[in-house]
Length: 175
Image (cartoon, rainbow, N blue to C red; front, side, top):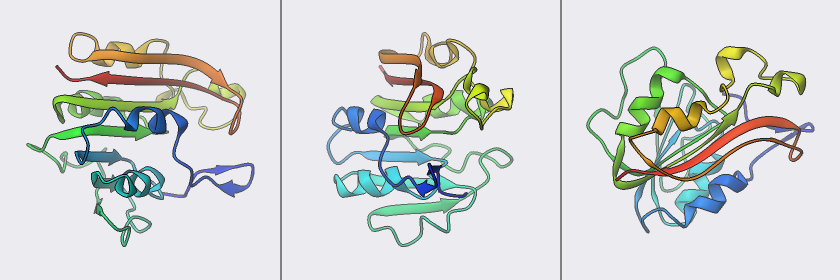
């Protein structure tokens, strides 16, 4: 996966949404970074002392990051590589594969935290992604966890920085 680029530069900073919710993860807990890309969240979470697993279709950028167990897997075409494992947190940013949403919820330990942020319908007016297959419908993240997780925070908005984008984000805790 190509590192995210904003205004021509690689974005290595953790998402402010992930930063906001990291303190709500069990200290030293197991965290899964899904579609981890260049590892910006995996690297940062490992530095905070979490046990981090990171999965991506191309894990070349993840190998060699201290404190991160990198796994290369096509989670859209292959079986879920973490079947039977539970995590204190699952972090997903800028990625959407709808069939995976229930699996991510099921991958949380009791009390575990889902921190999810990705593009929403309306983003097509700002650029990519513009394909509806990669854009959340209004309220879609809420519906994905309704009745299964306790919603701590949810936003559906247009952000201006680091670049204009329509996004949805949720932080939700397993009972």
